[in-house]
Amino acid sequence: MWISTGIRPRQWVAVHRKHHAFTDIAGDPHSPVLHGWLKVQMLNVQMYRREARNPETVARYARDLPQTRLDRIYYDHALFGLAVGVGLLCLAAGWRVGLLAAFVHLNVYLGGSAAVNAIGHHFGRRPYANSAGNLQWLALITAGEGLHNNHHAAPTAAKLAHRRFEIDPGWYVIKVLSWLRLAKVRLTDLRLTPSARRAV
Image 1 (tube, rainbow, N blue to C red):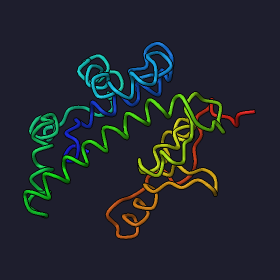
Image 2 (image 1 turned 135 degrees about the horizontal axis):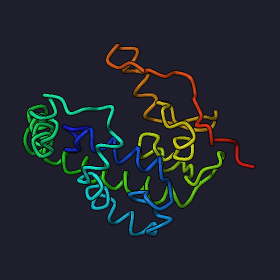
Image 3 (image 1 turned 30 degrees about the vertical axis):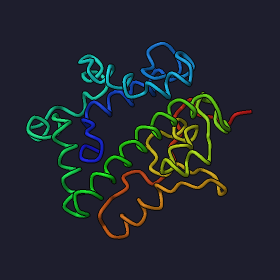
Image 4 (image 1 turned 90 degrees about the vertical axis):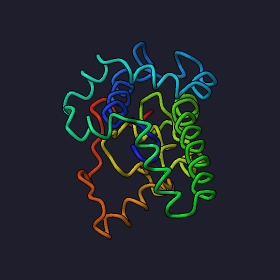
C-alpha cells in the first residue's frame, strides 16, 4: 500500500477502523449518508486525509500499531513511498510505461476507493443488516471491495464473497499468493460481527 499509493499504513488502519466504529453515523470520516454520495465520491481523498492527520484518531484506532523505527525512517514519509513505487515501475517497464502505469493505477485506486465509500454505502444488495451495499459490478473493478455489505458484516475476512454467485477477484490473487507462499491468511473462517445478522 505504501509504495503503490503513498498511504501511511498506521493512518489508513486508524481511519478505516474509525469508519467501522461509526459507520454512517456522526463520527464516520467519509459517510455518504451524512455528506451525500456525490460529495464522498468527489472528495473522498480530502476527507480521508483530514481524518488521517488527526493525532487522536491515530492514537485511538491504531494503538495496537505503535510507531516503529521503520515507520520513522520509511513508512511515515508518504511521498517517499510513492516515489519508491513509481521508481520500481519505471525500472521494470521503462520510464514512459512506468509513469503511465503509475498515473493509471493512482487514478483507478482513488476513484475505486471513493466509489466503494460513496456508492457502496448508498446502493446495492444488503444481505446483512448494515448500511453498506453489495455491488458485484463494483467488486469486479475494485478487487472485491464492492461486496461492501459483506465486508462490514465480517471486517476481518480476507474473502469478501460470502455466496456462490459472488465474485471476489482479490481473493483469487490472495489464494495464488498463498499457494506460492508469498502471503498468509491469518483468519480462514468467516467471523461475523456480533451485530451482523441476515437482513429480513
